[in-house]
Image 1 (tube, rainbow, N blue to C red):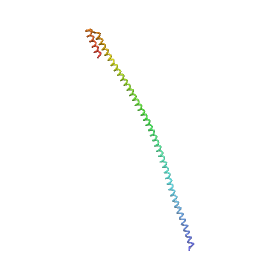
Image 2 (spheres, rainbow, N blue to C red):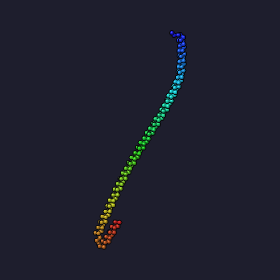
Image 3 (spheres, one colour):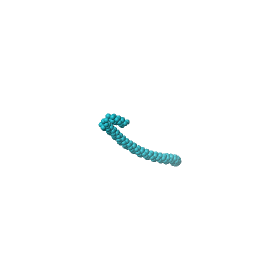
Length: 169
């Protein structure tokens, strides 16, 4: 049978064990609580530092995007400037060649006019030469016909020959 004292001792031991257990649990909870708070604080600090780091990275990326947009705008401006310069150069070259060919055409027309003018002068000179030769021939013939005297004829012939030689010079 069970002894009542035995139950009381057991109950006392049980209560003592229970108190000890609760004390140990409270100590463990206290230490665990402070340790958990420490870990939570560290975790919170880590999360906050990660947020700050993410914000810094975001700001850096925003700056990089802004810088890239600025470079893109500069590149587009340079492209536009190159297009404008190219158009200007093309227009200048176009005008240059237009003027060059126009001047060449004008020079060709001038040369053509000069050539025709020189040919005209050459033809006129040839005409006058033939005319003078024909005139001299006619004059010579007339003189021969009119001067039939022998001495007079010789003198006249000499003068005609002298005159012809003079014209040839």
